[in-house]
Length: 229
Length: 401
Image (cartoon, rainbow over the protein chains, first blue to last red):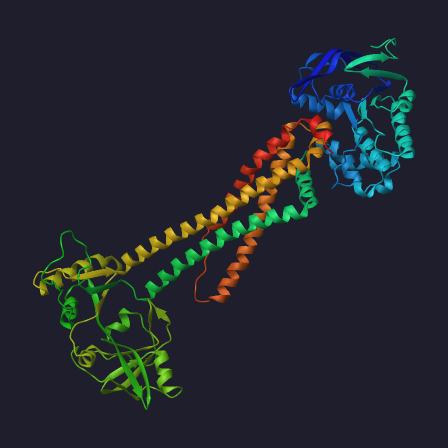
């Protein structure tokens, strides 16, 4: 599903050029559950951003679902993000003035889906994540775990093929973190490909495949032996 | 996103930050209200003057002694005082077919008294024609009688205020007042007409012009009011007056003729320029409001960096984010302009309550222009922040909490 070939990404920080990614190649099959681990600054977030089309590689090629997306325009990339990819962030990134339901509805609104269908899909999604009674609450009236579940509902409302999670439990206590991980694993159980960035080794061990990064390179990949299409 | 979704999203963004939104609406509202109210005042002043002129009478020409034309060269050494205008000059004007009526005017101030009460007022000498020429109206009695102009009848017509001062509630017609050394019989009382061109027609006494000549012991007139026989005859009447007076004054052009239309046109131009000037000044406040919108939208963009990053992450292209922020600026402008129109309407109501005589009138173009400029500046100044939002790098935007 994801085919990254010799990806390079260089940032300029002040006068220095920082190699965030060096010669990274990664193949992820549909339905995989994969964690990217490594110390901070190892390039794991940059890799996730490139996979999520929020960032473009300087060199190398990226094919998503057999489509070369390296040269897509801003509009086309936005459309891919809208329909194929769901994001889960460490800091949830809910819009504070909107209710839980409205936050979940946002991708549907942007995709131009009619209100009646939006309402129905949002209600189903919130129900599934046990948030039905929180639909009209604003983010500041929700606990951390509830906020992240709202964010997960938002990430999956468009039924994406791929969910990218960047430290999804990084800002949660243990119990709610466990809750969130269970939810994410349930998504994977439904066939959604999940790529998760974390520096929590315990969390990393739960995934079927682990990728270790260091200084912009992949230093270990437990699933590299897999037959990846 | 449908237009309804955009409106709802922007509306939530506006209500999400009530203080900044209300401040911005206030600035816009003040700008729009200032434009509308100031132009209303200017237009009101113009109408007020126009109204004053028409209340003077129709097809009116005013003949003043002396030439108001400026010519080059040094001033004449031997005092070239213009000849006086006389009653005979005035009567000679009736000869012209372009002239319907002529009213000689003599003006002075004299004490008017009755049984111990005395009042210094303007005593005007004129003829029966003044009634028609000046569009006067009587409350009681009649105006100066027709007849020989040189008959110094001892009759007087009193203005409304003056009558009340001297007679109170008693009937004045048939009574007597003393003006200077003579006793005058009151034959009429003017209806209340208010002020016209600074002359209070309530506080005035009108006597036959011959009586006034005797009273002031002089023959020269203050001016001659001439009523042309029709609107189209005004130009001919003007020429006729100049010709007749020149003939009578040994070939000297020593009078000035002012037509009502010319005066009206002049004042009209002045007040129109004035209205545009104040509208322009008020327009500056709209521009300031526009800059304020830009400022606040820029703050909004940096405040909502995370939100913009998120919108990009969930698949909003840059163009859509640009439209969202532009729509927000436009909505703020429209709501502000609407509030401004309400404010202006309230101000107009207040003004008309405070000054009932002053015709506060909003010209049709003013609110349209004000709202147009408001929305225009809102959009114009909204472009920069919206573009900043649209071009934001999603990764950098999301990394800020």
